[in-house]
Length: 314
Image (cartoon, rainbow, N blue to C red; front, top):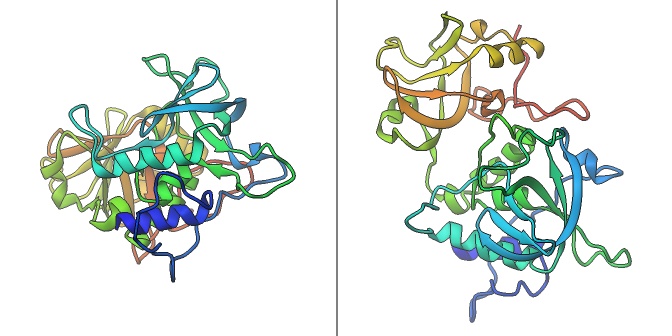
């Protein structure tokens, strides 16, 4: 599986794929879909709806799977990514491979930086690191040797990370889910083994970030908190809750969650114990609606908008 990831990355990155080539092993590229960069509009800002370009710089070094240093001294935390095998105690094989991919893809290369529109909202974490989406660009306009590459999208499509939107950085949710879905379909990287939990299995994973998929049994409103129930007994079944602010956002998009009974959804967040396994959402982009085959119901968005994969519900 590692060789397949490396072969896929070599197909979309530099021809020599420095540092990732497996000695005496042929590239496993035959019959494998070629990876492509994110679609770019007439200007790259069109590819990052809801974000603005705040600068560009060369990458000096890779620090962790989601942290890097620029040549101007800025430390960048990659927005929207979660690495299941990266913990304070150890760095797992996929996180290590993500570091190698980033080194090959970015070291010494110029990146454009895209961040939230408000300077005081979502641009900096408690460590003082800048939170951003990055686009590797080719400053040499005379050659197409290097494609523009969306860094987060590349790691997701290689199956080295999973998407995690947050209250302060909900942008690019649909685009990230599309890349993640490709890795899931190909069973690449982390997706070699099933990652999505059923509501019944959620109890076994309290205290961790998870993706849970299932059919909504009922939806109720209690003391201004909306509860999405996935079983008949709300006291011990898996439940998702949304506060008033998220309910208002849903209403602004013409969605009434009280009518969601019977719908199949995929939701992601940190599992806690509250009358059974529970996820308290802080952003509505963490919800995906699914079709009868368990696939995202829609991937089409109006021009310039960012939204979860909601289908229209009457």
